[in-house]
Image (cartoon, rainbow, N blue to C red; front, top):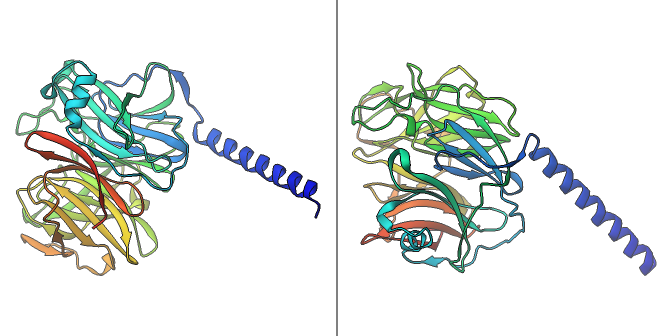
Length: 368
């Protein structure tokens, strides 16, 4: 083969690949429009294909898909060490740390850039925003006033005036976590239904709003079936070659739920495979692989960071009786303290947001 022919063939191949990428991206942004993304709040986030960022807006009862344009591939995330990022964010916004709330931190799996959802102010007057940073520590705001985006409504979110038994807004728990699994946006939270614990499975690109599936679980620490406690955090994981959610609830049952059962209006009974201790709220979870084995890493409000083996999860007997601790075993990673947010940075490292004496630090750690 001549050098000229080889060059032409490579040029044609590059053109075909570019066209394929362009077609794939266009397919993922069907229904997107350019303009202001009218978020009323910015809560849980997750990345989908081609740098599309999903943002949960509980106050507005909607999920937004935002084209970040952040598609440059980066195999490794680099070392993160951004101390007092809450102070840096406050200074950037011209306010004080007590006037901001960091709601979620996620890593773009393509670029390894980090996205942070923030509330400035409190209550109904709070303003949502999304920030971006990399390992250099430079913060930039993701402009939402003129951005390619789409949104989908949550038709049965709790009423804005509804309160729980602690006087907290039920509306702000319309979305407690988001994930992108098998071409669908999975949304955990509460609805206004009698069985208010809800998981929604919405195909992407968005075409129409989706009613959720009502979720029932057995809570071992409480010794009863429950239908009104929301999933606090979840991850996707294959069990017996089928997509499942591993969902964690307050006080702290770990439940497996087949994604295929999350049909609009259905009633789904999850299988509780672990009770990890009461008086605790799970905050964030990731799944990772190390030395040929899969693990779950879970950050908690009062029980530290737990590492659980993710092998043979189908083999654990369902928990159907009152118990404090049972099922999938775990170890506590004693060196990880004050962790509020977790995400996988790359195949070797995680990213965490951790509190230390009032300061919130964003840093990478080797996967344990």
